[in-house]
Image (cartoon, rainbow, N blue to C red; front, side, top):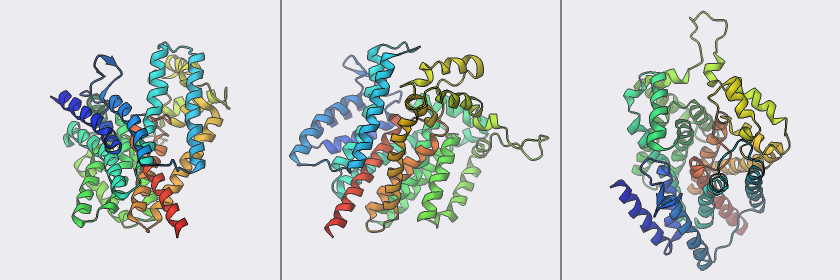
Length: 444
C-alpha cells in the first residue's frame, strides 16, 4: 500500500510538472525526507537507479526549461556567486575525472562511479538552484519555504516514532538504539539527522515571521519543540553542538529573549530524556573519579582525535590539489588506518579533512568564500526588519548552513548529498530574497 501511494503521488507530480513545474519541485523536495527510507522503491519499471525521486527530478528539468521560457525568467544570480558555484561544480567534476584515471583500490565499475560520485552528487544541488529561479513572488516563496521545512518535520516525526522517550533512559542505550534503528528505518544516519534538525529548529523559528495569524505562530512554536525533542533523541553530539552554536549566534544578534527560554527548554528535555544528558557528557569524567585527567579524549571524540592527525599529515603529501575524489581511500590512507590504527573509520569523519584530501587547499579556497558569503548574506537579511521574508530567509539559510559548517567538524561532507538538499534549498531562497531586496533598494 505504501509503495502504491508513492507511485501514485510520483506519477501525479510528474504529470503536473508540465502545468506547474514549481509545485512539482516542492513535492520533490518534500520527498527527500524519505528518499532513502526502506519503503522507497529502489527502481521503477525494472530500471536500476530509477527511483521515484529520480523520475520526478528528470521530469521537472525539461518542464522548468519550458516554463521559464514562457515566464520569460532571467537568471539573475549575482555574478560572483555564479562564479563560485561554477568553480564548486568544476572541482567536483575534476575530482571525479581524477578518480576515473587513477582508481587505486576502488573496484566499482565506471557506470557505478559515474552514477554515485558525479550524477548523484550534482543533482542534490539542483533543487535549491531551481527554487532560486522560481520563487519570484511571495506565494511561491512561502510554498518553497514550507516544502523544505516539511522535510525536517517528517524526519523529526519518524525519529520520535522509532526513538520513544523510554529509549532515552541511558546515554549508551540511547546511542545504540539510534544507531540500530534510525538509519535502517529512516534512511539517514543518526549523526546526519542530528545536524539536520540542529539547524531546522532555528529555521522554523525564523519561518514564524511569515505567519500572519497569531495562532499559526504559536502552533509553529509547538513544531519547534517537536524538532528540538527529535534532535535530542538522535544522540548525535555533533548536532547538539551545531544547534547550540546556531542558536547562540541568532539569539545574540536578534532573538535575545530566547536566551532566557533556551535553558528552560533544555531542562525539560533532560527531564523527560535523561539519557540525553549522559550522552552529551560522554568523555567528561566525574569530579569524584580518581583520575588526573578530567576529559577522556578518546571517548569524547569517539577515536577521532587519535586518527585525525594521520589524516592531516597525509594532506601535506598533496597540499595544493589533493588526491582527487575518494582521496582517503585512493591514497592508501584508509587501508593503513584500518590495519594499523582503528578499523572503524571507513571515511574521515570530518568534512574539512575529506575535502582537503580530495581537493587540497586550492579546493578549500573555492568553497570557503562561497559558504562565508552565504552566511554573511543570511545574517544581513536576518537583521533587516524591512520585510518578514528577509528575516525568514536569512534565519533559515543561516541556521541550516551554519549547522552543517559546525557539524562538518565531526562528520558530513562538502559534497552535496540527500541530507544537504534542505540546506541548498534554504540557500536558493535566501539568494532570491537577496536579489529582490537589492532590486527594491536600487529602484528606491
